[in-house]
Image (cartoon, rainbow, N blue to C red; front, side):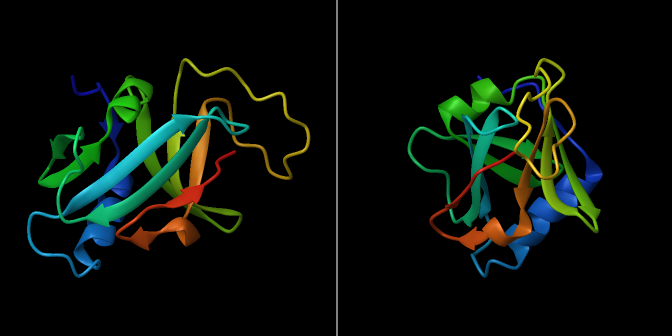
Length: 134
């Protein structure tokens, strides 16, 4: 079952660029693996891939193919995926209205409640690189 997820125009543009500049053939998509963890409640890995991995389902949003493993589909239900570009933060953010505020005081720059971020530096082609969020 595909999640009820909202993708903002900024996030859609970012994901489309990752896929378009990956050098992969037509039909490639944005693979997003989300797992629990990190200060904000989510860890994520993403990459451009030629096709969905076994077990992935494809969510098509305005022509963008988003390849989602089972666990990601569960965690993304009700979440808004956005992209922010500020002097102190640039990357995808996940806004989850069900997520409680992080109580971690060790973070130099805490994200707002329910927001996880993926830094642009975690962008890869092919096998995803881990990006700890939060």
